[in-house]
Image: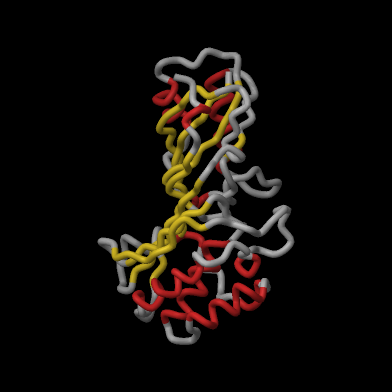
Length: 247
């Protein structure tokens, strides 16, 4: 039986989602907890790879098991998992459903604040100067004109293509500052954090919309802005076709 597992995690203590040889990962902790509960090794496959320090309000992973899941599965998993990882739901899916390849859309948020806030320091990035968010939103519309985001991708990845179809990209005010929400059918490694760094160049008046176009069309990571810190980034939503779920 194949299952989709819906979970969230605070990524501060982890070297990203994917199993690492020299650091603890969310995947490793999840697999160990599943093995404890189901009394067998249970490999999991995530919908994507979040980098070290990045959070997830919603991550999806699939796993296979012949063991019948108890009605109290979610509660029992959460009693085993550490406090910074939580399981929310488990859903039965068709045998060939894939958490990564069947995803039709993913959404991220990047959180910033512009004043000293002792409660936000580890879950949002403080900007020492206030950028022009309206100008950044106009520039974000330029992103929607393109599909090749090589300039915002980490170098030397195993991605077969750097094309992505953006669904939304916009800054909005929040109770503690500002949030950049971006959705796409897929994302490249480090893409969101480098896009945010480049938009801030525009917000601070060091680049304009035409400059952003030149950055994108250069297909050169060195032309884009800095990669922003990981702790401001959250994976928030993953969409799937309804026909992969068993009723």
